[in-house]
Amino acid sequence: MRIGLGLAALGRPAYINLGRTEELPAERDVEAMRRATYAVLDAAYKAGIRWIDVARSYGRAEEFLAGWLGRRTPGDLTVSSKWGYTYVGAWRMDAAMHEVKEHSASSFSRQWSESRALLGSAINLYQVHSLTTDSPLFTDEPLLRALSALSDDGVRVGFSTSGPRQGEVIRRAFELEVAGRPIFTAVQSTWNLLEPSAGRALAEAHAAGNLVLVKETLANGRLVVSPPPVLARIAARHGVGPDAVAVAAVLARPWADTVLVGPASPAQLTANLAATRMNLADGELRALATLAEPPGEYWGRRSSLHWR
Image (cartoon, rainbow, N blue to C red; front, side, top):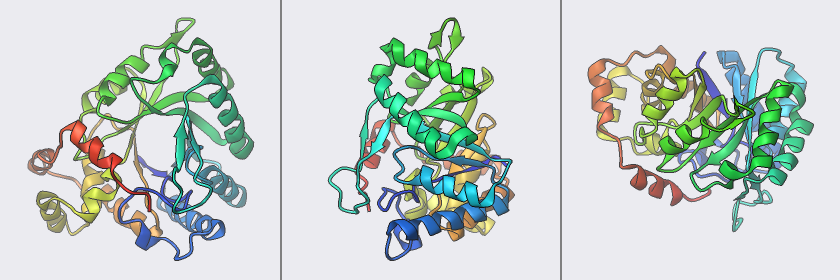
């Protein structure tokens, strides 16, 4: 299955996804969120999902996943995690700040040790979290050497992207080398019906043999909570929710190797997975392509979403 499960919406009490609150326990203490995470992981595994994506900044997502792996001991999962943001929300809904970004060699060393302590050899792919054009990573030789050394231990090295210049970041990052060898062989980028601007760069990355993961396929819930009329009409025609159509549109991209969804409950996961039973017609894909927003406008709206 090309669908993967991301735990951004489950590893911490507050997040920016719309349509999430109603799916979560009334009291979002650590144990309640752990149980909610296990329930979604169980449902995902039963449905055939074999890729799980977490991050150091997703609160206790790595811890929750490690506990679930210890109980279920599945031997056929691919696990990806990310470093570069630190969760500082102290498990508070009203935290003044929820995460802090730092792309430095010391941050990488600390967070890689933390990830390995929790997940051990289960980590198949370790990614720089939200690489942007202004990241000091591009000129930090010690950091680049440390990242490159991960592949010597059998861990694939990748990066995720955010912001209106994703395409530029993707092309620039894949040019980075250490001792004549590319550092990165995987990328995780935002691509959805509202923000498809990275598509050409992702297609190029895929054609060059790199692994392409797609995140934020539902635009942090915007496509579900307030679906544009054309999306709602196509969903009604197929007898599914707008989330399924939005995910199916990503699955229609041949360069998308793994398409991540981030449900907050088994019910949301089931609705998302209806995408795997759909085939969108060319005319429907053309109609959906009209929903794209200017990248600057899209990312501006995303940055205004509230943690809740």
